Image (cartoon, rainbow, N blue to C red; front, top):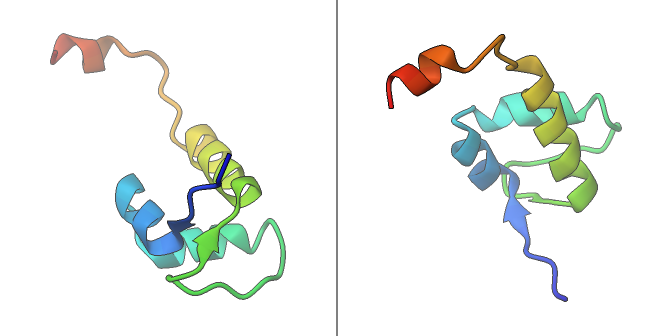
Length: 68
């Protein structure tokens, strides 16, 4: 099964974050130099998703569902 390549800048846009924030975050994973046009590996995508999921947890979803 072919792997879909996602550019760092596209993924940052999907998350609503500046690409530089993702680049800085990935420095915690390793010391590789990345540009905004760098395609992300599966390991990098998983790292970023886990990092931002943990950083943006909510206590409960009552407010979210009240608006729906």
